[in-house]
Length: 119
Length: 119
Image 1 (cartoon, chains in turn red, yellow):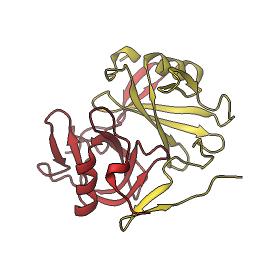
Image 2: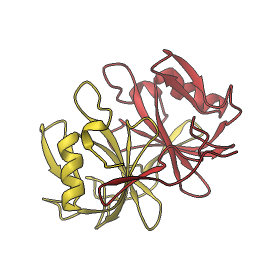
Image 3: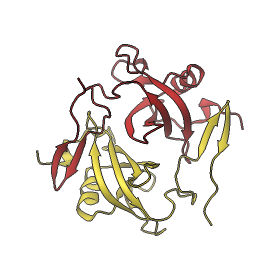
């Protein structure tokens, strides 16, 4: 079946959540949002492109930071309302300069920071 | 710092996306939604509990199917608007009876089904 980004299920803002996972290590790096055009651009360029809700603009990951995500594989879920991107991540994925965005663990009722920003 | 579910950033429906990852294999199993009470219940019971948007009710994963998710670790992201759950998954995670929800790969413009429902 030919894939058409218009067949995905977007929310009332026209967005779908996209989970980025390191294709080599399996680490979940981050979650951000795409619209149908961002999905199409990601596929055609191989450069992961989100939709920035704060800036209301395409966000080519790493365009300013250099911390680009190269798309290795795109997957859809059963309900077609969530994407999983397996990516080749250059540098830290998080805007805080940490390797991943999920760096806070809840442990025994406390928040524990698991990693420091990279130098 | 003590963790309080009220300090997470929920959307205008009072929900936060939660990504479930197999703690042993690193596979991303599914993505669903939680409200503050579902986060608190998940932490207090160790049984992953989502909020069903279609039923508008708590959804204790596996309560009817037996395909429960035991919480191994809860993580927050940098913006406190997404959760990563490392879980111990019993049976298939997907309601289609597949091991994971992300079983469709987009490859050369085509949708390819990667796995069949389990017997």
